[in-house]
Length: 111
Image (tube, rainbow, N blue to C red; front, side, top):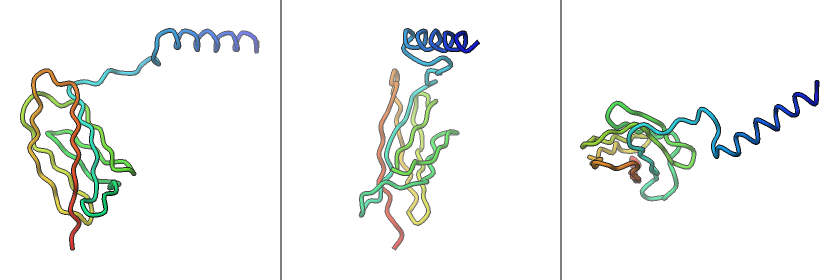
């Protein structure tokens, strides 16, 4: 029984390595937006910043990075906010044929 399970695991591992990626790994839909939210004065990443564009939202990671999938072509308002910082509003133009965008934002802390 143990040999059968071991052979099955080895067969699955070999087939996955031959495919190049794990099964059920979906391709991103629409344009992917990635970026970094930092403190304008101190320069460090801001953890927990809220990022919203169109109807899509996410929160920045501990290092300030974020990723949003599913943007479509057009001009969108990007809103980024975090506790203790001023709100950032910017217009972002997603061009025809673009697959990914990078947009970094520096937030200003309240005094």
